[in-house]
Amino acid sequence: MRFCVVTFGCQMNVHDSDWLARALEVRGWERVSEDQARVFIVNTCSVREKPEQKVYSLLGRLGDLCGRDPDAFVAVGGCVAQQVGRGFLERFSFVRLVFGTDGLVRAPDALVRLVGDPRARESLLESSETFVEREDVWSLPGPAPAQAFVNIMQGCDNFCAYCIVPYVRGPQRSRRPEAVLAECRVLVGRGVREITLLGQNVNSFGLDRGGTGVGFAELLDRVAAIPGLERLRFTTSHPKDIDPEVIAAFARLPNLCPHLHLPLQSGSDRVLRRMGRRYDRAAYLGIVEALGRARPDMVLTTDLIVGFPGETEEDFSQTLDLVQAVGFQSSFSFKYSDRPGVAAERMGPKVEPLVASDRLARLQNLQNSITRKCLKNCVGLQTSVLFEGLSRRQARGEVFWRGRDPAGRVVNVPRPESGPELTGRMMQVRLVEAKKHSLLGERAGSTW
Ligand code: 5AD
Ligand code: SF4
Image 1: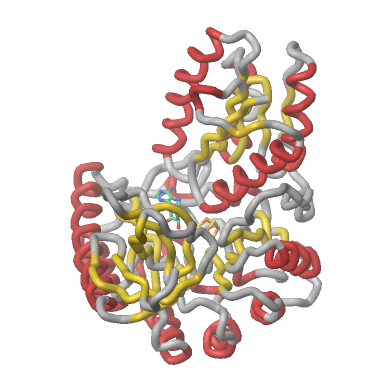
Image 2: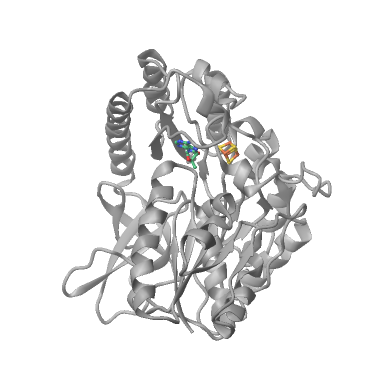
């Protein structure tokens, strides 16, 4: 059966979609582009209103496609599916499967059943009290990707005032450390050289009921020790939970990459308190300094929200100030968006949309100038690049390959058309030019 997956949202969703696609390929299905597919899988995100709206406009379009082919149908999964539930089945006749975040694991078999029984419709919306293990989908022939993601927990217990995640992904459930290690070993054995450990709040790994006494710092030690693993990363971290042992791990573990994504959200203590983040500017700066001492080449990235209910111009200027002081390499910044049922929905006063847009533009201007400076400072240096695939930008006579340096910066490197494929290869590269969001490099050695 020919299928396609459309993914909205975070790294977690991208990883979930990738697993689902592989699980279907293991069952003999073929992943194709949207215009050739007969089964459309939509993995949704409800963290902000915009991606949620996009789901509905996509469903409208897919409904037209299904109208022309009676065997085609749509499956909707992820956070919006968890919230809306069977409503999707009731509202759209061409939707034949809804699966929630824990139901994902049963989606491949359900899809196979639905193809076999054209009148059937199913929903997989139950939540589990423990971490939901998934089948190993790495037995497929073919080259392994250069890098892979490994889930170490599901859900989140933090209930930050703006965030819908704990409501749709459920409470935090840590995975058994042995299961994490086993998956990492399989991946490295198949040729993966870089692993990113994934969770909503990885620093509280092991601290829920699923914990076995192994904390996050110890997990890092154990994964980093897998022979052949050249790069280890993790995301996402909550500043209130970063343990000194994890900071020390950056100094101790040579394959732990010098990059940390550390969501700040706001630079104003008053706003941070109202967000329920449980750290302040001083604590955040303390972590930044400690990280810099552990790894002087440490690179930080962050998430920021502007226009949180009650945010004043003074609060916002505190955010600008802290962004400047930390000098984030890059950041994702968002306008606050009201989500149903979260604490901030009932907080006021709401910030005028035009004021929020103006703040977002000012913040992004500042970030762009900091990013430019950070990237310019790299020019002239030599670094190792792990190649992930072809660059989006190509030029005649040469092939551009895209990879990342240890700090996660994107580096594009040209190679003559006749040269070998670089995906999965690690190479020494000299950085020669800074672009807006990436670097241009050239091979440092004499052979490819
Ligand atoms: N409005 C705007 N941004 C949000 N985020 C989470 N919830 C909201 C919301 N209601 C942002 C946070 C988080 C990132 C994944 O999305 O910055 O870190
Ligand atoms: Fe949302 Fe806060 Fe949990 Fe992150 S830590 S997923 S922002 S509730």
